[in-house]
Image 1 (cartoon, helix red, strand yellow):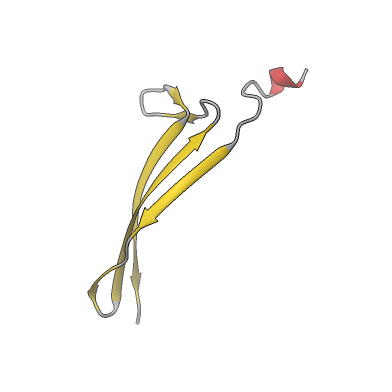
Image 2: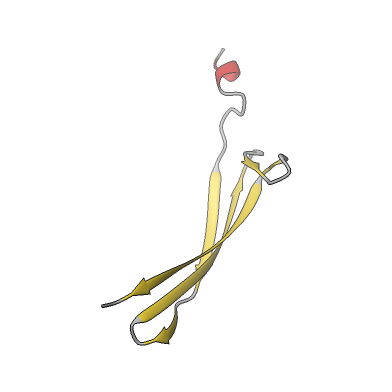
Length: 66
């Protein structure tokens, strides 16, 4: 059946993101953020190859106005 084509079946995904705006200069905005994703099945792979039902992501971007 379809389970062999899609072995994970279905999953529900959820996420929470938090971030801040930091303006070290009038024309520069640095925006770091942290994100937590979670699911109802083990769908995220970590760096050791383990499947988990959650993952953390940290990122930063920068806006320069000119």
